[in-house]
Amino acid sequence: MNILVIGGGGREHAIIQKLKEDSRTEKIYALPGSGGIAADAECHPVAATDIPAIVSFAEEHSIDLAVVAPDDPLVLGAADALREAGILCFGPQKNAAAIEGSKVFAKNLMKKYGIPTAAYETFDHMDKALSYVETCPLPTVVKADGLALGKGVLICETRDAAREAVKAMMQDRIFGASGARIVIEEFLTGPEVSVLSFTDGETLVPMVPSMDHKRALDGDKGLNTGGMGTIAPNPFYTAEVAQQCMETIFLPTIRAMKAEGRPFSGCLYFGLMLTPDGPKVIEYNCRFGDPETQVVLPLLESSLLEIMLAVSKGTLAETEVKFSEKSACCVILASKGYPQHYEKGYPITLPETGPGERIYIAGAALKDGHLVSNGGRVLGAAAVADSLPGAVKAAYALADRIHFENAFCRRDIGQKALAALGGEQ
Ligand code: AMP
Ligand code: GLY
Image (cartoon, rainbow, N blue to C red; front, side, top):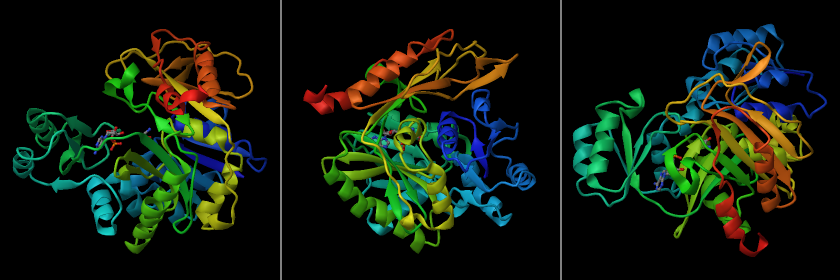
């Protein structure tokens, strides 16, 4: 089969490497891919948001399955356009991708269908938002309605900070048009869990639960980033919590989307917080998480190609989705200064990888045949092992064999999970 993957980050690299394991995969194209992905797929310089060019490419290259991985093309309707051109596509249609594309939509959906989430108010006018923050409970959480590269959430401890956040989003438009509407919501506490799921709109199968580490520095200090590392499975997510989530969150969400005339097909990502009052939804994403995918897919024992075909055709109920009992850890190597200012163009030296080790390239380009850094998050060093402590140790051992100038990583990925496992360390 000829497969087309849209996107070019570490997540897409992990998807491509997994799809290659199926013997039916003949050729994989990536738009735009990256210098690192070029080792596993044929990359072409077409932007992930250039929908007409993506559709033409798919038609010209006899694509049997297109996988739209990033949020922006999904929110812009890439999956709809591919399907209209008769191409089988993994990824939600535009009106279902709104579950990530608009936080106001997602919050209203949860309220309407009784899905547990933080209490909230939405605002179109800055004056009303400013008067609300004069009396709301603190801390409070201010969120831009639209996509903001995962940065559109500001947690405010004081009224001053909340006023600043509202003005920054609605007046200064620091997140552009995404701040035209905002959500102000209750601050929740508890361990966070990312649950990615496969769903064809009727059947939903959760993947192994994972934990992201969003802050740039050790001890959850520093700025929010796209994600500095992940582990799976997440030990806070017990079988009992899993059942509760299935009954109160996962199935109600796909039923709600169907009832709204927005059936969701693809990977639905639940960002959850396990609060003292039970699991609640922090956010939905309409796609695989990055870098969650880099720990979840290495643990998938079934064929990703088979599952993606089943999701796209609506036959997930008849398809096996099996995960291994092992654990995985992914440590992101970033360029010094990320998520703010950082330099690009440092040559990268990659080691040979052993069993259970994988390197997922996130931001790198080929220059004169050599891989050089080309983004803030440069790559992920991932490892699978029998236990979580083993996976964490192996991922760091791999990360320490990878070199580029000004590289940095968090040294505490997985520590919270290991502490939760207590005696098993
Ligand atoms: P989001 O982009 O919605 O996932 O938010 C980014 C991060 O902000 C989350 O991973 C949480 O750590 C934090 N966050 C978002 N909403 C809340 C909330 N209501 N209470 C506490 N923390 C939150
Ligand atoms: N790792 C968080 C996300 O993909 O949104």
